Amino acid sequence: MSERLKAILSKKGAIKKIGVVGMGYVGIPAAALFADSCAYDFVWGFQRNSPSSGYKIDLLNRGISPLKGKEPMLDSLLARVANAGKFACTSDFSNISKTDAVTISIQTPFLNKDDLEPDFRPLLEGLRSVGKHITEGSLVVLESTVTPGTTDGIAKQILEEESGLTAGEDFALAHAPERVMVGRLIQNIQEHDRIVGGIDDVSTQRAKELYSPILTKGKAIPMSTRAAEVTKTAENALRDLQIAAINELALYCEAMGINVYDVKAGVDSLKGEGITRALLYPGAGVGGHCLTKDTYHLERGVKMSPLKPDLPDNNSSIFVVARNINDFMPRHMFNLTVQGLKRAGKKPEGANVAILGWAFLNNSDDARNTPSEAYHDLLLKAGANVKVHDPHVENYPGVAILQDPLSVLRNSDAIAIMTGHDEYFKLNALTVKELAGSEQPVIIDGRNVVSPDEFIDSGFIYKGIGRGDKNMHPIRPLNPLECIAVGHHAGP
Image (cartoon, rainbow, N blue to C red):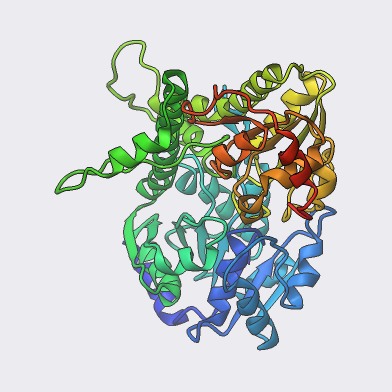
């Protein structure tokens, strides 16, 4: 324990002004909650004024969230704190000198997962910007998911070099990883326990002071910095493993001609003391910023450790195997598409395919590492004509995203549901078939959204992940009366 740092913080007093670096899915709700707390006087949101994200600054200063999709409580919270004069967003990082604590939430993707090299350039740039302006007694908290060893390694080094101060002596440093899911950002921050790992006891305690006022059901859980880093990477690697388990089971069920959802319900039904066998849901792929790369942060942390784990010879990491399975699911959607088109007497080359859903998560605009992109690219490579609909994603580099479902569904040979948006649960089989304009259109359900029997009875060729009970159904073309009925439905 540093008596010097302890004395500095005691003299400085309670945290009153906060800076949040990175106005994204983590930083925006955190800044709003900090600003809404009576424990704090003011919160700065720091955002680079770049061509791709500088637009957020004006929106946030007007109390408007730049995040699309359904995000309960966020819009009203932002409006309240902006109107109350407790929050402002800026690209001027010199204002960090006016804060008592700074949190950093910047993405940490991988340049190449095969050689375990992360792209820390944006994070390192953020650390340098923070380091230039922190003062004696500042608290710096790294919220970004990082390779274990980063906080008390390169992050500490940069902050010290830029500030001329010493971590643990002149300023406090901690890692408190975010644990949020798009669609429930505010709720997650308030209700989830907060892992807090300082580089020393004083830093840990200061970080606990920062987060405690915004926790409702959650509590701060102290541990070492390295343990906090491993906790975040491990919990996401484990979730990815759970998803991979049900995805592989879904592939097994398809091969054996059974419904994976029956199996899931059966497994879930076994309850009792010490029994934890609940399964997650299979799907068209795993996207987002976290699960797609946190396994590699964990693997890199082990690789960089001076001690190597005692494992069997020629052991393959189950976490990397899980990652490979989940990465395969868009390819499986493509395979199902090809199979469905073949049953309709068509090939992917020249086929018109409608993709429903570009966001990786239902009712969200978050399209980071979306599995839809891999599926989309496979279709293009096979010579298909592709249209994409998403009610929440307005634009994406290199891909035209349409908000009008009718124009996307019209004249489609195949329709693939990649995201479980609420709108897609309302699809009417006869109306969709009329729009498709095909005698035997194909529907490929990657999220168990539609009723297989409804679409099969309406003349569709159905393919669904994990639906071995339906994927080889007899093809039922519409009879004349059904063809007439198609015209009586106005919308999807």
